[in-house]
Image 1 (spheres, one colour):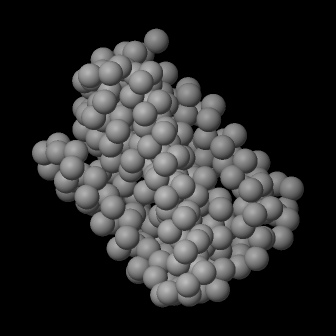
Image 2 (image 1 turned 90 degrees about the horizontal axis):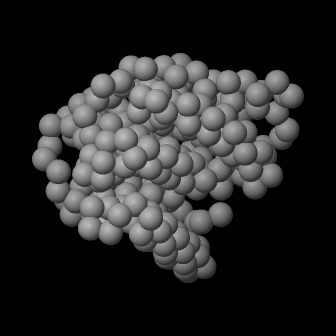
Length: 269
């Protein structure tokens, strides 16, 4: 089976189910927690796995490093949407954020691969967005959505995956990696939340997403560096350990910031 078709089928299988789960989490635990979940390396891990089997570890390692730098573009999307949401409705916000994502990706695709600098750029982008996000009181967990909304979210995610994957066909490893964090989950959740509940839950969701991207960056960097020398199993295992380790570290830091009441990027809850 063609590699692009395999990726498409896996994404179509994963995206709707994941959106359904995250939507239910947002209802129970709030939008910031949902944002944390969206940063899980679902898409990127799937793509790396398939690329190792079909294109070889060198191709997949380059894609993993590209995904690391793709965090910059995802952060551009997040801040573009959030800042626009202070004044405009979701169609304008989506247009501004998507234009920023595409422009950032096209620029970054021209840069040479260098893991340390890519990691630094990703971390700086995450921190910058956290400080630029509008600061509002976190909303309470949202009221139950209409019965049709979560299935519609799932269908929207599947259609977005189909459109983006079709448009991104025949890409090289670098651009494939840069596009692997394409904000399918972010677009779906932000648009539906914004249209029904206004901008405040979107800000909470975007903040949670940025917190989670620290862990995602660790995963991509470790997999990109270790895939060739250690192979897929050990590289992904080490990447998941790095993901969990950074996740725990970020939670500890945020807990301390919250208890001391220092100004900064916000509390973890």
